Image (tube, rainbow, N blue to C red):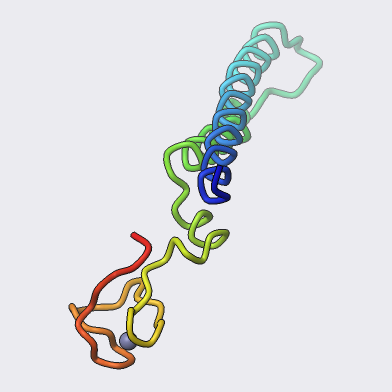
Length: 113
Ligand SMILES: [Zn+2]
């Protein structure tokens, strides 16, 4: 297995695990906060509304989904060959405007995409 393929498989697996953990965290936070709300006694201070938002779980689900459905920024950072380069001078053509290389002016032929 090529290292790029291995990296992507591992990235998908980590994304799936982080997403699943986020879903469990959302469920437990919502359930825990609901129990706190309904079981609270008059001696405890009232729970602020923002404590009902399961922030940790939502962040987990978002991060896991990003990793599972591509994670292009992380993949490009980890795998330099993933980025487009100019055939002639090797200039990194990521986000370069137009259809020619800004460094040497050669007509763009993208490698590695
Ligand atoms: Zn060039």
